[in-house]
Length: 222
Image (cartoon, rainbow, N blue to C red; front, side, top):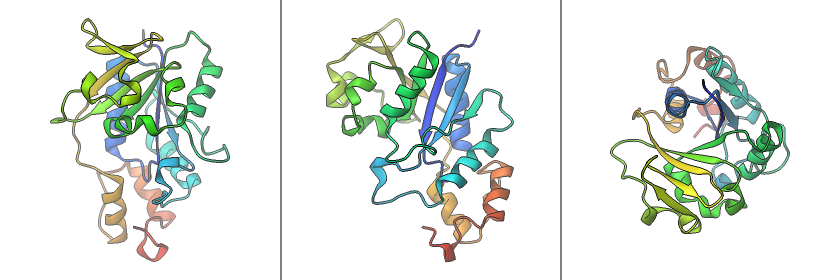
C-alpha cells in the first residue's frame, strides 16, 4: 500500500510535462500516497530573477495541470503565506499537519541540493524529512564527495538501500528520472515569440496561458 507524502516545490512558471513526469516517477518509485506541488510565492534564491507570472496564476496553472492525477495535490501553503518562501517553513507546516511519525519526503533537483547549504535552517530541515534528489542521465552519481559541505558529515551510505542515512534516521535517495528536454524558460520564450507550446504543457495550462495572455512580449516576458 502506498504511504507517505512528497513535497515538490518550485516556481512552476509555468508547470510543464517535465515537472509532471518527474513527480509521477518519484511517487511510483518511493511508493508515495501523494505528491504535493507547492508553488513558491517569493523564492528567496531568485531575487534577481523573480517569477514572471503572478503567484496566483502559477498556482492556478498547477491546479489545472495536475487535475487528472489523484496522486497529485496542489498546496497553497507558500502562495498564501507572506514573506519569502522558505522550504523549512513549508516542511515544518507539513510535519505539524501530518504528525511526527508520518513519512515525509522533500523532492528537489540535484542543482538545488548542491546549493543546500545556503538554505535557511538547512541542518534542521534534514532532521524533519527524507529527501529525494532528482537527477537525469548522464548526471554523475551522488556520492559523499559531492554532497554539500553542510550535509556531508551528517550522512552515511547505506548499501542495502543505495541511499544515504542521516544521523536523525531520515534517508536521502537519488532518483534517476526520465530526461525530458523541457524548460519553463524555453516555454515562456516560445509564448513570447507566438510559437506553439502544445505537448510541452498540459492542454488546460496551454489554454490558461492563452486566455490570460501570460508571458507575452508586451507584458515584459523574458
